[in-house]
Amino acid sequence: MYNTDIIDSFAISLVELIGFFSAPQRVELLLREADVDLDRALFPLLVCLAMRGPLSIAALSDQIGRDHTTISRQLSKLESLGLIARHSGADDKRIRTISLTPAGEEIAKAVTAARRRLLSLALAGWSETDLADLARLNRRFVGALSEAIRERSAMRGGGAETS
Image (cartoon, rainbow, N blue to C red):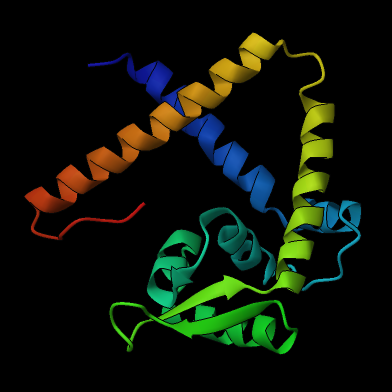
């Protein structure tokens, strides 16, 4: 068993990090830095599709942590803006996948460039080794967390969770 103080400190830092990146003023700052005019409620969907590629509504809902109905409503807004397209699934025509349109990809590229600029400011004093270690350890943590959740879910009969 690990030292519970370290686990608690780590958990607190995660909550603070999630809060930092999901705070409305941070999203607004990133959108301004990207010179993008977009409802901030739609922002996580656009970013998730840019990073994960085409997804079903269920997978997108799981990734964003919002219910299917809310995601569907927000996708309709993105579709009306010409930023996403819906496609019938390759294997199952009942499952529709969502992908970015070229206009959506342009916005995603602008947001990515803005994120890089802002993170570069925050990490300016970090060495390349420290940055590589941070990225490696974060990927390792996400993998271990996903595996632990899959195992726990399987033990309780809940099926496998997607990551």
